[in-house]
Image 1: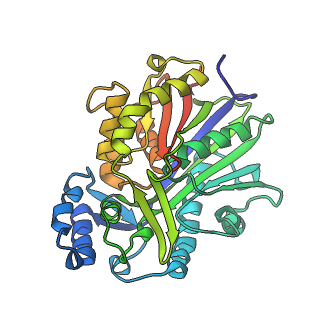
Image 2: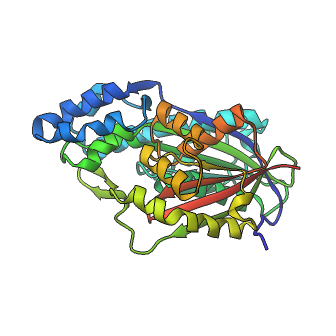
Length: 355
């Protein structure tokens, strides 16, 4: 039998926000050459990753010259706290306005972010300006990485389903660009410079009401022995990205079975899913997903378009894809949101068009 929320939950709105700074891929390549090229003879051998990443532009929170200087934990986190709070507020306000819901009506705040440390957490820092109630419940989540957009939204749905009329605001903010490191010239660091952008997304969910999109079953799969495939090394002078070359082949080999398990948990066969809406972790990952899920090449068109315009923003990115899908194609009969993150983890969430 499918797992469904105890009380039906509607997704009332979805909004996104990005910083003002725009970095072209050619500009990112020139930046990386300045940062790394003078210290490694093989930079030019690795530099084609910029040309093959499928990215034209991305948004960044700091002026370009900031990235050319050395920064320690304190400075990086100062930038994170300031910029992440503002992106949180921008995305949250847009989502609440779209839903016709006031901040004071929100019962639960779910916040996902892994690119900085905030204690008090982001929703607490934004509470006064947003106008949240004093008794609002707060659920800040750290460590999910790219899977956080799906896992966080699934959790928001479960929390909304616990009582009729319960309203949940889900916000995810990631500032991947501030993790760019000058101290280590590694392939992973160069790939990060080619891929990473900054952004935020927010959703309003409410139980026991009618809406165009119903939030159904969410699930996760954690593969053992895969901790070093993706994640962060936490050290001085900041977060150090872990990108293993095994990611695309691992996805190609394992995702079909993982998706079958997640679809079965929702009471469906894979062929019953109208469309997959995937986190576009990179061009090779998108191709691996198409291969593993037996999709025709080019099926994940909205994923490629979002990657091209915004780069990989980690957790919020899949919600940018969903936003584009809804705007251009409308809500399919159902869609499975799918993202991969540290663990190594696959996170899925079934959404359906309300009857």
